Length: 407
Image (cartoon, rainbow, N blue to C red):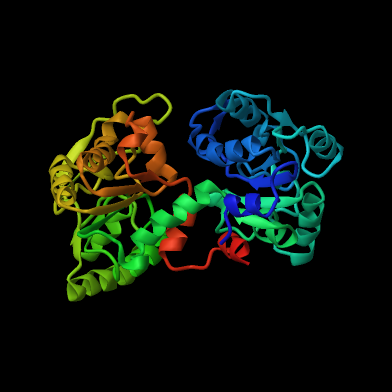
């Protein structure tokens, strides 16, 4: 896979129009960005290209508009924040392939930077029809001389700007994608450089979202810790009653099989010994106290909804991570957005901070939790920008955006 340095050596950067597919899909409250982590992650590639004299055309999606302009998903606030972080002007095009995009790009000087409006405002970006997607990619290609893929959070999508556009231009991977791949190769054992013991912490709401990665990591990891809403399917598989907790009964056979495989392979499966719950889901807007109830996992009351791992489980998880040499964490331990149910997630994050291991936070809600709970991001080995992409890579799937860059 080529890199930016390869494009520089080939003369594809200086004085050229370089299309950078970034992932600037940040959370917004109105027009206020509540977490700019993905914007900051895109800065090294954008800065390198601008300093090398490229005319940098940045493009991204934001949210899930329905293939048409929608003001609530505009990238205008992102353009303003990107300019602040870069300390330079960022021109903003109010469309993707129309008059504004063409005029904005034509107006760029060497080293100038522009951001196009949300790619998903055009139905061709996400179309399942190859011809429609290709037609949109053709129009995007008219804007640029070369392409740099750096939106790791989108590489698992077969979208026009991710999959089809690289085939139409000289292309390479940006710094972010190169970094993410180097980390993921360590987690999959590529190059035999995964330091052991290798511990994996998985959380989140649905066990069905993590079955593929559990299946694949049973061949790689030494220890797997399970928390979050998904744990209740595991507990039910062990014969425990789980009250009103989230439960995917149809996944119990698969969970049972994984537990049996883990025993056969000598992979340690660690489940909570107690949980924190409440009789109803907490109010995440007002954050009013929720009267939490702590229960052993074999005595969860019938009217209780499990919302976090308990205090003894936090100690257990911290102990199981203390001697690890590599740790991958994806998914919160509970409803961390509410202070009554954030301590399990906080405990795992703190265990990673305290550990001398190479620690990887697998994007998505885990990365958001690290920031919301006030942890120093530099205390972790790596914080991924792509939760879904990271998981699919760890499942052993071929990711369309990476395949396109390798072509």
